[in-house]
Amino acid sequence: MANRAVEPELSTGRQLGLSTNTPPPSIPLTFFSLALAGLVACGVALSLTSSAAVVDPTQDPVIAAAHLGMLATLSMGVLGAIHQFVPVLTQCPLRSVPLARFTFASWLLGSWLLPIGFASGVEALVEVGGVCAALAIAFLVVNLWTPLGVHGKGAPVTGLRIAIAGLAATGAFGGVYVADRSGAWFDLSGHLLLAHASIGLLAWLGLTYASVSEKLVPMFLLSHAPKEQRAGTVAVLAIPIGVLLLSPSLLFGVSALGWAGGAVVIVGLGAHVVSLANKVRHRRRPADLYLAFVATAEVAMVSGVALAIGAAIEIGHNHHFGVALAAAAVAAGGGWLLIALLGHLYKIVPFVLWQKLRALGLRTNVHGRQLVFGDLYDHRLAVASYLLAAAGVASASLGFAISSSDLLGAGGTLLAGAGVATVGNLSVVPWKTSARLRAKGSARSGASGVRS
Image 1: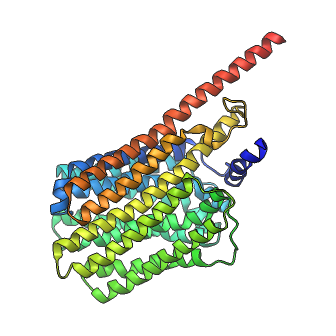
Image 2: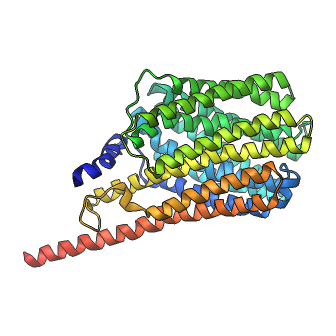
C-alpha cells in the first residue's frame, strides 16, 4: 500500500525528470524566489496606492504597483518556468546557462527599476529599467532560439513561440510609452495602457500559461485525456489572433475591431477552459489543493472576461465606471495567472528540491518512508497561501470595480500575505526538512561505522 501511495508522485517525477537538457536548479529557483518577492512588493504597493487607484487607476503610483505585479511577479515567475520547461518539452538544452543568468539579472533590474521610476517620477530610472528589460528579452530570444525555433512540435511549442513574440511586442510597446513620457512625441491617451496591458496579459503571460498547461496539468493530475481533443490548439491560436485585433482597436479607438478581437480572444480562452476541463475529467489523482488552485484561477479568468465586457459597454456612457471596470478586469486577469502560478510552484519547486535531495542520497523522509514532493512543504501553510491569494484577487478586483479603497487596500495586504506564506513554505520549510534529513542520514552513517 505504501508503494502505491507514493507512486503518483514518482510517476510525475519521471515525466518531468531533470535530464541533462535542463539547466541547473538554481536557474528556475532564483526566478521563482524573486517572483514571490515581487508579489509581496506588489501587494504592499497596491495597499499604499489604494486611495489614488479608485480615483484614477492610470496614475503613476498605481502603474508602478501594476508593473510590480506584471513584471516583477508574473513575468519573473513565467520566465523561470520557461527556462525549466522548454528544454523538457523540446528535448533540447538552452543555448547557454550563463545567458539564462544574464536574463535573470537584466529582468530583475528592469522589473524593479521601472516601477520605482514610475512611483518616484525619476524618468532616468524608467529609461534604464526599460533598457534592462529589453536586454533580458533579447537574451531570452537568443537562448531559446534553438530549442523553440528548431525542436519540438504541437500546441504547447507553437503557443510558446508566439508567446515569446508577444513578450517582444510588449517590450516594444513599453518602449513607445517610455518615449512618450520622456519626449511627449505622441498624442497617446489612457487607451495606450489598456492596449499595452492586453498584449502583455494575454499574448505573453496568458498564452504562455495556456500553452504550458497543455503539458503540466495532465502531468500533475495524472490525466490521460483523448489525444484527438483540439481545444488546446484552438486556444493557443485564437488568443494571439484576438489580441492582434484587440490591441490596435484599444489604441486607436476602433470599436468594431475591438469587439471582433474581444470575441476571438473569448473563443481562445473558452477553448483553454474546455481543454483544462477535459484534463480534469480524465484525471487519475483525487481532487486536491493543486486542483483548487487551477479551478480558482479559471474562475478569476472568467470574471475578468465579464468585467472587460462590462467595461466596454459602460465606458462610453459612464467613463469613470467604465475605467474602474477595466482596471478590475486587468486585476482579475492578473489574478488568473497569479493563482495558477502559485499552484504550479507548489508542484515544480518541491520537485526540483526533491531531485536535489535524491542526488545527495536522501531517499526517505523523517518517518522512514519514501521521500515524495509533499514532504518538502507544510500543507496547512499551502492552504493558507491559496486562501490568501484567492481572497486577495477577489478583494482587489471588487475594490477596483466599485471604487472602494478599503477593499483594494485589503486585497493588497492579502496578496502580500500570500507571497510571504508561499516564499516561507517553499524556502524555509524545505531548508529545515533538508537539514533534518541530512542530520538523520549522518546519524545513520555514524551508527553504521560504529557497528563496523
